[in-house]
Amino acid sequence: MLAIFPKLPKQFPFLPPLFSSQRAPTRRRLLPLRLLMASPTAGDAPLAAPAPAADATDAALAAAAAVPDQDAEFGFQRPEVGKEKLAGTVGFHERHVFLCYKGPEEWPSHLEAAESERLPRLLAAAIKARKPNLKKTTKLTICEGEDGTESSNGDVLIFPDMIRYKALTHFDVDNFVEEVLVKDTEWLPGSPEAINGSYVFVCCHGSRDKRCGVCGPALIKRFKEDISGLGLDGQVAVRACSHVGGHKYAGNVIIFRSDGKGEVTGHWYGYIVPDDVPVLLHKHIGQGEIVDHLWRGQMGLSEEQQKQALELRNMTNGAKESLEETGIDGAYCNPAAAGGCCQGNGGFTCCQTDLPKEKQDKSVAAEQNQKGSQQENDKESGTGSKKGHTKTCPMPTWFETWERADTYAALAVVAAAASVFVAFRIYKNLN
Image 1 (tube, rainbow, N blue to C red):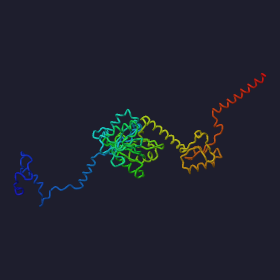
Image 2: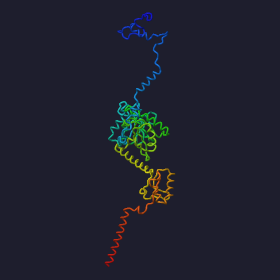
Image 3: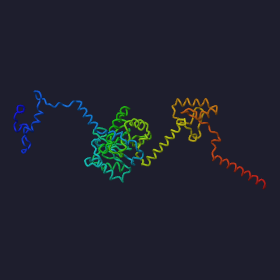
Image 4: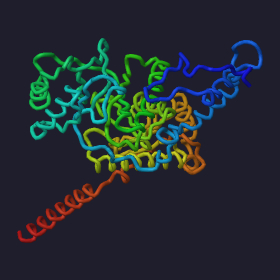
């Protein structure tokens, strides 16, 4: 043993004691260290070999498996998605103000109350203080802003006015609220800029609720991809926004779009998943149709009015479906609405149909060829008629157009004539 392990000094020069009270290592204490440093062959190669690559891969996979699935817990696959009714979950407001300020990754949990975020805090406080004097019920939300873009930090977007004010600072907050939101006039330091197109806001406030932080960015990505793919760049803008209310309905989406009359409406949607994005772009933004099963509510309507609006649309859609089931595919005939001018001659008809023009022409020609027989007309108008067939209305007769007022007028004329006749007979008898 002494030949293998020569006499060691009481203290190694490369292992100085950390404290003066610490004892110098003895031969017994250094024996494990010498065994580890020893090699069975000449050289200084250590005995311990590096772990195989396969072991490192397995360890990485095990660590990844230990991380919980965010999509299942907070994302689109969470159990609560689609479980609750959405209509009537939007608080009443008549005007929506968006302050462009930083990005979702920088927003604190309560952005409008954070001491470090002066501009959002002062604007929220000013709106709250002047709430009794506001002409319209106003809701404030923060949206992402980036200097050098069309939505720079400090810009303010106002809906349904569809205007933008540039470069609001914390020094101008009180004056801005007084002039724009209270007096409904222009803010003198900067004139409003008109904004066009449709605006989509997606809640991505992850520091407020993780569900929005998981769902929001995925929806933003899908919106931008589909907008670019459809060639809608410059027509549809997408922005991340802060908490809008209703975390459990994430993904939450707000769409501002002008209708056929030029009126701008703000519609809220909930439980949105990436596959719903093409539907919203096609139906809501492209055609102006509300996607009812995802609809939470609308700016300008109370919670009760939102529920009633959905019920009314469901009744209307149900009536359309009933018409389609009867086989006339939305065609109808209403002579009264046309003033009794429902005509079947000359190829004209007051009946409305949603068939293409070429099919309408074929249908009218078929009616003209068969209108000579009332029996054939009755057969065509029965249950055996082809779906989408346009029915020509027959010309109303004088008896069908006779109304109660006409009856009273005729009776009055007869009574007057009888009275004259009787009076004449009495006068003649007296003479």
